[in-house]
Amino acid sequence: MATPGPSAAPHAADPPLTAEQEEAVRQFGVLTTQDAETSVAFLRRSGWSVTVAVSKFFDGEDDSVPDLNNLPPPPQPGPPRPANNQPQRLIDLGDPLSGFDAAAGPPVHNVFEQARYAAEQNRRMAAERTDVARRIVVHPPAPVVRPSFFMALILSPFNLGYRLLAGLWSAVQYILGLVPGLGAFRRMASGARAAPRRQLNPRDAASRFKREFAEATGSEALPFVEMGYTQAYDKAKTEPKYLMMVLLAPEHDDTKSYARDTLLHPDVVEFVNNPANNIMLWGGSVRDPEAYQVSIEHRVTKFPFMAMICVTPKEGGSTRMGTVKRVVGPVSAGYLLEQLRLTTAKYADDLAAVRAVRVANETTRNIRIEQDNAYERSLAIDRERARQRQEAERQRQEAEQQARDREAEAARQAQLGRQWRAWRATTLAPEPAAGTANVVRVAIKLPESRGGERLRRSFAADATVEDLYAFVECNSKEVSDEEADGDTEDGVISEKATKPAGYTHVYKFRIASMMPRELHEPSESKTLLEAIGKSASLVVEEVEESEEGEDSDAGAD
Image 1 (cartoon, rainbow, N blue to C red):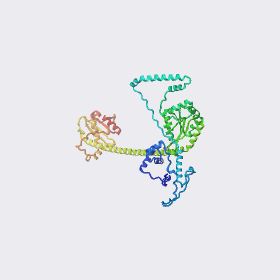
Image 2 (cartoon, helix red, strand yellow):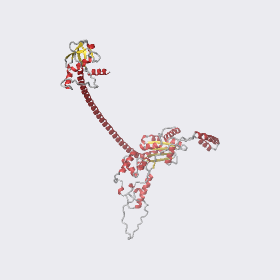
Image 3 (cartoon, rainbow, N blue to C red):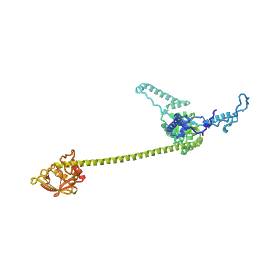
């Protein structure tokens, strides 16, 4: 037998992983949510095949070959053999297999006993290794195919004849069963009259088994899970827990007594219901497809049957599910309780270790998820702050642009206003000569903002109120100062001034009579003679910006 060299020792440093191996570890971790160390161990035992490793993870490993790294060290080399030309001395070694104790370890200098020790170790490990409890997936029953209406109409005579013959044969069997000594016919008749069992999906079948068990025994003390075997298997593997599987055959003579006296014994019920024992109870009737397939998988040949299934990390990793205890046939409640206690005590440390590793992995995963979430929240906050800064900068730029636009518009309006006043000054009618009839004479007091002067002027009788406004607009000191700084040259209004296109001048003042007080709007249709008479003393009042906006809106309307 070949033995591993020193390089294959368990404590030897593993070579670094290649890029392909690291990718395989990553894929295995994504599919199974295992840490890197467990993933590497599975992949090494699977020849770095992700498919094989994932299959072993979910189905369990069934490899009874011992690890070569755990074999004892090789025998030390003996004295050198003599040359071919030298005579050899034959020594009687006796029976190499006699008087050998495998538990005491192999002799170092005997290769035969070394091989015997390795074989004994293999047999011992194979004997102690539990059977793999595989995951069973039951396919749903095929739907019943019903013939079409025309085919059913054609076959209706045959169907009717079959029903008549079956009913006649059942009646004959029942009558013959009443004859003493012909009980077989009675059983045949009762079996013929029994309705066929409807096939359900695994979850509904488990619920039906629990209901039928309670109806048959009159007790609901046992916590049968209402889920299929596959779901119970996965749950016991994930949490992890002991899966106590009970298979019953209703036709068996010992089924009722086993259920009533053994399973429903107060001590057994208390032990199964104790949360500290981590037992999940699943039951099934072999008349159901899933329970029947489970019985075939576990090689059940005698009923009632009970098996304990749990993870066996020492025999193939933290995901291998093994059948750690089998109780076949009708047994007493004391024996069943003793087996349950021994099994749970034997594998309690293994389940606790697996549970601790999974809790640690789950904690690490939750911490990583929380860190990722915190990082995402931090990124979201930073993005929101950046968005707010960009929004504030955009609003600031918009405000500045609006201010520049308002300033430009105000400058343009001022320029148009100066141009309009220059044009309007050239269009004012000259003052009538002295002695002219039908003349309106006005005395206008300007406000302090426009110089505070008193203007006197005569207008023709057909002059409008707007002409009076234009006169005040073109002759106030404020306007004169603007014109001196504007387009006019040395304050002299150019005769070539033109009316600005698309511009409507808005007067920022109003003219009113004092006694009685009357406000005169700048109307182009109303004459001064109609508004104030032949003479009047008027005052000019400045208009606030709000009033000016209302007046402009009213004018637009």
